[in-house]
Image 1: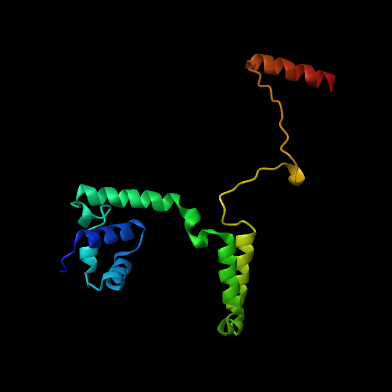
Image 2 (image 1 turned 135 degrees about the vertical axis):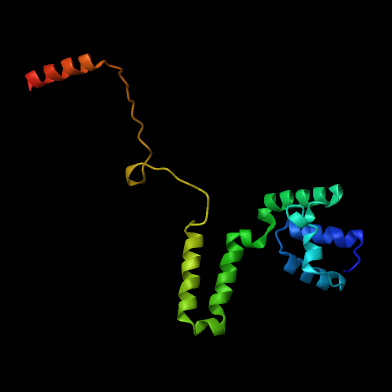
Length: 160
């Protein structure tokens, strides 16, 4: 098991807080610091897992702070921007290897249409018939006894 200093521990905690898997985090630690750690050692720095229940308060607080920031800052992520995604799709379509795969091209085009068409947004628009504004109706609720209802029905039947 590798000995980790505070800098390594913070790196691991922040990586796990951003929903990187322990395997991905192990690879990131190897790339960043040149040290090899096990997945189990890495998972011990995730307070949401059973192995991370005994994580120090400071590291657990850092985990939750990083996770909250990560959730709130989706605008800073390039793929959260439609223009970036469309450019990526275009690069995929123009890739010479993909030009020979019509099924992949159709899949990419379908994805572009869904993205541009707003299929993956949480926005809901309510409209009336033909896309016009909603029409409100005034409804009056009347409480009537069964005898009164029978009397009114009898009057209507006699008229018609």
